[in-house]
Length: 160
Image 1 (cartoon, one colour):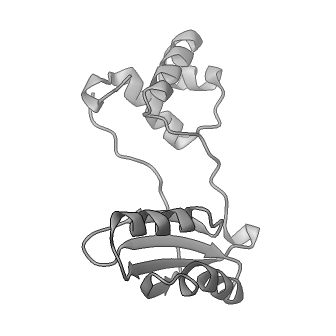
Image 2 (cartoon, rainbow, N blue to C red):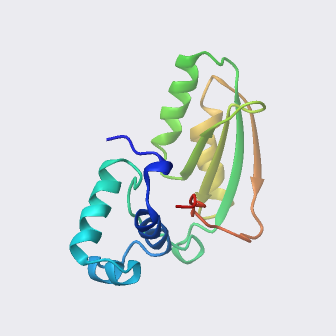
Image 3 (cartoon, rainbow, N blue to C red):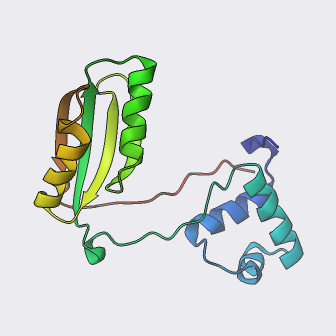
């Protein structure tokens, strides 16, 4: 089922907004906060999930408290940009646990990655494995975060 934002009513949007705030809410809690019955809530959330509007529910963890306090934003430019080369590099980094996000971008570098590591030594080991040993990587530019001022994986939802 394909769902677009203009097929969503106010209740759907309220549920999506509440789930963005706290996806760990029980169905009963979510229904009460959305001002709908638990059965309606369950049915709508199931429909929104099946339509692909809710991709998954996750817990956001603290990198600092879990020993992954070094955050790097990494630009990667490949030597060859054919579709098979882009796909191969993308698959290579998707398999790396240090890579939290991978974006194929244009113009500029071919990829922008968000990488978390325990410290500079761990980052250097990951960079060696991910970039240096890759024959098709032409350029790597890393920016190290000194402060996370905002981290909000929340989407602005359309009006009902």
